[in-house]
Amino acid sequence: QVQLVESGGGLVQPGGSLRLSCAASGTIFSINTMDWYRQAPGKQRELVARITSGGRTNYRDSVKGRFTISRDNAKNTVYLQMNSLKPEDTAVYYCHTKYVLNDYWGQGTQVTVSS
Image (cartoon, rainbow, N blue to C red; front, side, top):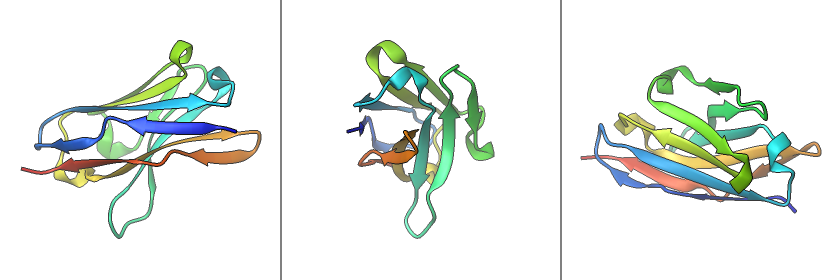
């Protein structure tokens, strides 16, 4: 059974930084593409960043230059470093992966950017 557990969310002022972590178990982590999604109140869930098993990364335009996704295969963990945070980044952030044709999601971690 694949499990994803996020941590690191919280309340931060505009311009601040947070680092989210997602610890994976029950899968061969090193072969998985890992994603961070977010969902703001009243909006659809959207892909924020993706990292492949080979380390290739993709970002949605609104976070390019501010967010960095990375992975540590020895720790089965994927990270999302978020800098220069804006109020519009406020959302629940979810870790996601596909394994053996199934989708797996973490429970989510709340990020609130407010003064």
